[in-house]
Image (cartoon, rainbow, N blue to C red):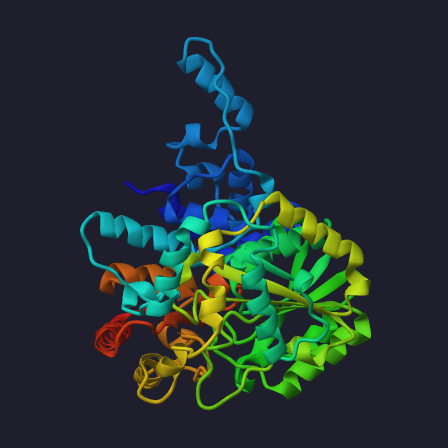
Length: 498
């Protein structure tokens, strides 16, 4: 039987509209409709309420009764109708329905979104899925350094209680010394906060900064948590372009054009996820100059700063901006292959006087979550000291280096696929020839690849990239596994057309 999702997709194809187009049309009409909602409608997980149904029908130039097929009326009733129907079906007692907050309407996190949900469903049915979608080193055989595990086990009995909200003294001291090596200016112990991964701290910093309507510049493509947290905090993410023709470096002029009186900050992700780009000092200096001109905060996500290849050097942007207020994020999840330990931190540096009230807000939110996990904090000093085992992975002959070499050549050898070679992290963001494969919907591409070849990737739109012509692959699996995966992608593209 034809479902609502089938009819919706057919109408979208007929009009040549993508999911993001429906979201934009809704915004123009003052209707709250998020990408996550549209994804759920298209995947058949849910059916819209009556007002959204009529908007979709109008946008797609179809009859609402046809779109709904009059088979799912109960699913498209208004809230009042649902309560009345529930009352009729339960002997007169009204059943209350709870919905998620409207603050989530425009929140997107497709790194673990509808395509991943479909992969989970397939796995529950017994299908083996090769996951190239998430930067989680442990499942691919990357092991935590023995010394880190040993030190944590020795300290567990001392980690049963809360720590100070900002973190253990030993952990923050080690982070402060690391900040000194990175030449971050004007950093003291009180400027360092540990977190349950960088993710928690991104959420905390956005919540403390943004009022409704405040704008923040975020890269496109981005790590989608930045956009999600800014949106959830009431702010307006404004995406500046990273230019593929310039090795995915930020387009400074595009950034400049998007600054206005409501802009509070610039976010950079360096090294970059999802592109693997590493920004040179010259580009960072231009961003600093722009932030200085408009007195903006700089947030720099540097979680991959120890995963830099080809003899390149990572430069912390805060080291170039002693007169600006900067917040630098890093942690151990990637460099020490312990994503599950949730060990992250942020460092405040530069001109803290201009952010005195904001820092009070950070302290308030930090205190409210009590502290980050103490066993994780306990191994920061060990992890940051002595030999850094990650260096063995990123030199020629090391796993990450050799896997990058393989995936870059293998994917770009497929007709219709091109890519900028990543210089850091363990991601690549290939471009697909949409004309050759007639691709108009990148989420559909990812779903079709998953269903046909049992390979899980993340489509480019999941990283707030607004064309259906990219996808991200994680090259953490061993070369023999990557070889099998790329072979299947090549086979798939020999016959695939949307």
